[in-house]
Length: 344
Image (cartoon, rainbow, N blue to C red):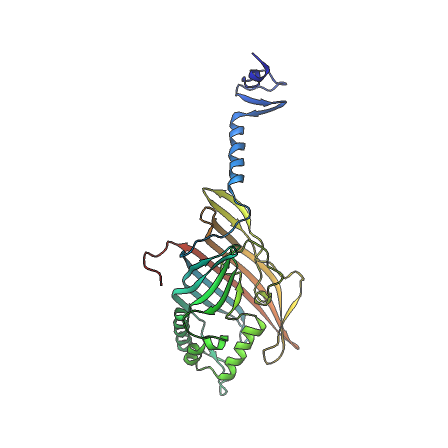
């Protein structure tokens, strides 16, 4: 029996520097590894090699992706009487991404929402004759119905990077939209909003928040790369960015990821909102992630699901006046099976 053969013999009781075992062991030079542990290590190596680095999205021409989309934003703040009031806004629907072209940089296509649903908190009417604001529940429902109609009609062109970034471009449904105000014509009529109010709201959304019809979106899908410093940061000004996702587990082509929402790098940094009647400063006091997880199909190179919930506290100041606001956000995205119908 040569030395190589002896290395694969089971160690008998009392052999091997006092180690008492009857289990077969594999001896590689001076290292002894039990056979069960050896297979565990092999499985771990196979798992590590199976996960693509980096994670990425993939597609081919004429692919159609459907996601169940649900987002709820709850705001708590004192009302005119100083009593803490809760107001929630919900948007649900089926997000559809149709891929029309594929290049080395990514994909291009059309984005739309099917079967949208909108729930708004009661609109407050600040009538000149009334001392306090009055909730207009029916008006809120009318505006919500108008929003549903506007969402149903809209079709947006997009380019989709492999890291998950969506660049949303011009509308493709034949309707020209140059500003947020154009998109809100029907809701504005339903709510009987004044022209001056619409102009102020448009400036607030487009100028202060940086949310425009043509924009870069890193919120709909989970992005795998850090925010590009060359891209505008305005949309994230009042929106805590996500951290880079971490892989928690990977099996059968499914990678389970986790992430969290990040507070501003410099604590106490305020965001100026100049479009309001008087200059207002907003400052994040705290950002807490309750849940941040996602599942990515590494074989299909597509997001399966995303579930997140986070809370934040903001402090608004205008001169000597202050307002403290509690914010809770829930967001869920789940990929659905493609519809068995002809593409639009």
